[in-house]
Image 1 (cartoon, rainbow, N blue to C red):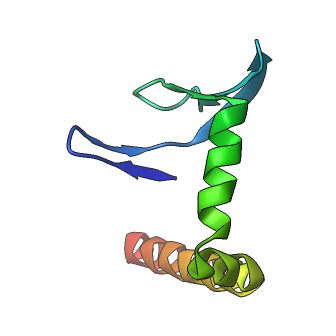
Image 2 (image 1 turned 30 degrees about the vertical axis):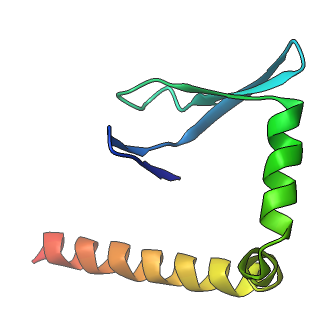
Length: 89
């Protein structure tokens, strides 16, 4: 997941999840240089779902997700193969 803001652009890789005092805490992967945590409250979930489900593009993304996933993984695999071929030359 990529997080972009005026302060920084961060590649956030999911680590472990934790539950504490009605909050879901998402920890970044231990291998990441900038360790971070995301705190998600029940109100955050309700708000996000309410806003997301009002947007037709979100519905389209959910419905077409299998196609997007396959296409994304194929492109990623092709890039990896091309990079490996470059290294062997």
